[in-house]
Length: 362
Image 1 (tube, helix red, strand yellow):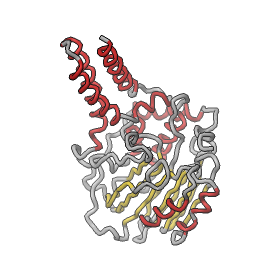
Image 2 (cartoon, one colour; image 1 turned 120 degrees about the vertical axis):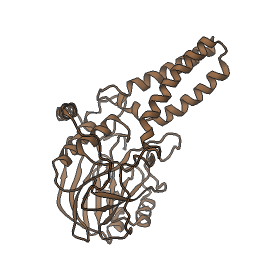
Image 3 (tube, helix red, strand yellow; image 1 turned 90 degrees about the vertical axis):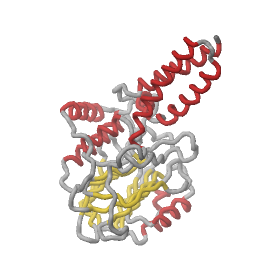
Image 4 (cartoon, helix red, strand yellow; image 1 turned 60 degrees about the vertical axis):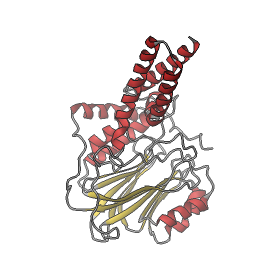
């Protein structure tokens, strides 16, 4: 009976975690339950194997397996779209990778307390992107990143000591540059117009909202993501949103962001590309993202090797075209989406606290 009880408790915990992950409460404890779907799915498989091995009583056996099956089916349904079993959302570019309408972007959260500057700099130089976005940079980091700026004369550098500093380096002209605290003080986002060699332009939104933590609300992060979605939706230019979004690709908030912004996720139909935590292979999920207008075609996407941070750098290459082509657009937003977004953004505006994480990196 003791073994049965342990297996039952674990099954109930997995069921509870699975159910709570769908509750619409802007709190870190609830939001983070959406992160480890792959891990919960794998552990449920192990639990089912132990159940079959250890439980002889048919009533216990089938009751436990039924609960475990519910967990497995629900978790798998949430993440299956990020496998080749689903049609890719972003179209592939059929032209050459060095065409004048192609732009490459590297996004990397360097982890402010990481002082292995040389490894990060070398990773960026090796990847040789047109645009490099580095997050969690303080003054020491921006000083060390100077080699990346060589050959990338268009720069927006905003070092901060609270783990929300950002630095953007570009070969291509940047104009209409804005550095805005969209929701929380000292949590900047960079917004700029990028002009490609063929004369086409697009808007890039570089974002790094606060992370959800189990003991505090997640209103700041949720509000910032949906504020960016609102800005993109009202922008007539082709747009790219990239950075450490501190949200997994399959979460309700991210899917709501897609419906509101109309942007595509190149991971859908291709893979997880889990970028965090780079230090532990068994505890990884996709936090570093790039979403793009349907007028872009995907040239390449890859996770780069470990560079000393708790995040892997992500590399994307996209071609800007003049049409949506055959891209599969996100589901259209409806009145319920707009109302939910309005409520979340209002809750974020009413926050009266410092951003999460200002002490965790010190």
